[in-house]
Image (tube, rainbow, N blue to C red; front, side):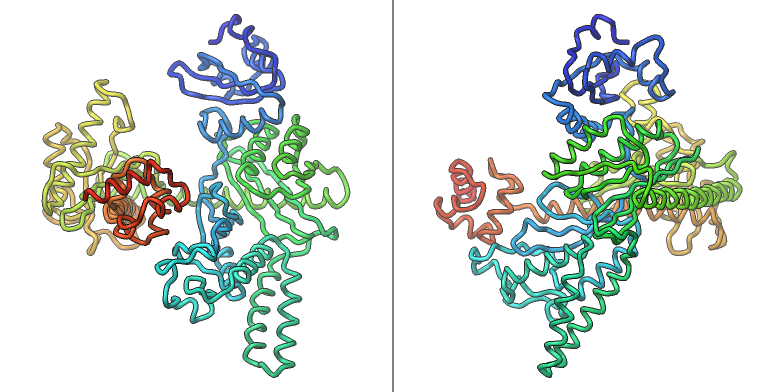
Length: 619
């Protein structure tokens, strides 16, 4: 607990306070107009805190602070610190699904467009997130008919910087079927290509009217000139574009950009809906569900959501309609104004059209929350039936609430790895997944690799239980251990468990082709009906272990195959390596280049250029 003397030393200036526990970990970050008054309020005997905050106060061992010149600066700093440290007691508004975004690499000479899961501040333009992935893919498919923008990973130079090796001689198939303008072969004017990209972005932003008019005029002009094939191409593009526009419903008589937030709460969780209205049209609706244990008072919860929602976005509309007033609404508005360099209004409407839109968002939130709770209840019931079925089929003393599965992956004995995945109550617990680089096995020996991974996992767990080493998640043993393979793999794992004195550990193996289950001390396999829910759960667990192992193995192989002599040069990191290879095309050409030529590469210094030449010419 923080002493009154420490509290009296905190300044009364605006800033951010950082609460830490006895181990020095950050457990809460907040901002205040007066740091001393705000922090003191947590430790007053008469303070009435929610159970969550009361639990936090009991764990606070020290408070640090950072003063700022204004409350707006404190707000921005609060957002950054929460994002960087993810404190335990701050509302962490990361939904349980990672929704996709459309990324337009605006910072590149010839921008690309593709789907990503995590937006970054890298100069690209992001559209989303799309909570309906199928809808996003359909919109993308239609728009690619209209806008032949490249989706490949080729690194293309800026216009005027082309070299003999920076342009392909022949464009790929997408060019020939009209899905790309072929910038890789220099067949398109850079300005024309970027206009296409800008038009693509305009449609996603809800401004398709100008493009519809332009395409209609070009179609009529081509038809008048008897260029019927050209007119048909414009017609097809116009048809695809109108299909996208038809998805955008007019919901407002005012031609304005707005984001409208609705919120609905239940004991089990909370749903937030965002209606994206552009020029009076509803172009997207996104929903975010958070389980009950994440919830605080509605104002605090929604405030945290709003800040984190817009912190990662480059665009905030001029009007943001919110479901409840916020105590520091003026400060948030000022932060939005600084971020966008123009006025942004936060409005809690009480009447008129804005109130109607807000009610529509609130009604949608309630409906979607109801559907989500039903869906989750059905999933929980299915998982419970699967666990009951497994317990009965395998004669387990109780439901296998924690299931761990192991698999190995290698390529002819090279880069051997193993995976451990964990399912709790029938669902994957990805934070408990572990990967192992196999170190003590040479050659192709899957049994020995599997034994090493299992031995390392349970040896570590035994030491954690005994308090010999710091706990890192291995102390909890599974109710059921699953091995990908047949009788041989099972025997190899049982040998390790016996060696460690864990003969009572329930373990099985699942063979892939016949889906037969092998059990210790039983010669004949157990074959369950393909429709059995317990078997389906085992298949999901086994397949997830296989996927996790193969992904890890491929990443190691990729690192090995992409290694070059530049990786060992002092002062050459990933960015300089990429720039050098883009400029010269190969390590041999870099080696043959002069110091002056190397210095023309962006980001190169004299010291780094000399180190490159010295290292490469000694090879």
